[in-house]
Length: 493
Image (cartoon, rainbow, N blue to C red; front, side, top):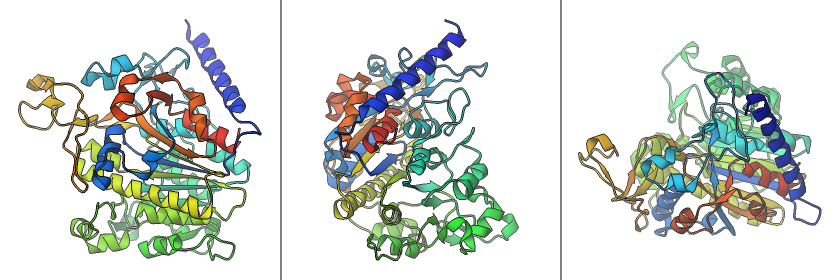
């Protein structure tokens, strides 16, 4: 089949998918005024189980793990061939095949000729646009066209949009929920679009040029790196806090906490728009990542850092308060970004801390919905952009040289995929990592609220073994179907 024909099939498949989305919602179904999407970056099912054991001592003991819809998503992206042509036929090119995955350690790297393991940018694009694309692209299609994403459609519908992350505001996942760029590495361009060009209501994360982990940098202004916040000129206008682009700028933890403490009612003294840049250039520490002992975070990160860096919970609740001022509704994306970074480093102890900060933010959002909104007008989805590390329980492999890495050349022996072992609350589960990178594993999907059952209208396949391992029915969707579920539930076509 030649590539022009193949490309025609892609267009036809996408058109069919869009028709499917349009028919998935009708006047008789509940429509969500508010859409809240939580993305645990790098959080596969076993990473999620680890986090649950850490906080609750149970395999699936967290609030969102009790949502009525529990499933999974295949996260693969489109492969860009050496001649630059990106091809993918949604009906034929299966990027996740259960029988291939469960063959052994190499199964997590399975790919079709026209698919590959995703990065965060391609996955965030899929979840926010309904289109799978090639690695590194942000709301740019596999063939190079700009895509109108879910945020864009919310703007058109008169709804507000917020983006919250525990890493830089212009990093891949927050950018995928907001911006459009050929490359995720164009941080300055991305942040300029977010701050100057998009009608975002809330934008929160890190990337502060003047601080590192809450500590003031000992550098002159012309020595600082402003790329994550739109360049020096944009940063100085924003920091002046005199109404530039209608932003109210905050950067200290006390300001984030004060915003979270507001009551979202008609008399609340809430800003119209908020740009919050926490006082660190890089990743934000999970200052509430403990299971029981908050003092342990001060011991780990230091008083200055804990005093300066907001929790993901504080940012999330503050964002919800600001967004709730729009009677037409809102879309909020919240990313727990650094589960991914911990799993890249094969650091289970840091992974559960990051996961705790993420899951506590979800707890707070659930409480907010039940207090200030309702599940009749809100849909909440908790998922991941991809799995990182290929985490399994202890004894998955015999580590011949005790280096913590699975390498067949070192005579390591694979024994089979072992579940994460039962672990007491506050203890790090005993796990092994088969990889230091992203994998093609399924990731969890939990859904509650208006239109949540729409998940089942987009099922792409079934993985019985995954269902047995993680206690769901085995049916999985594509990450691009997150967009379809949100669109159908909210009535935004």
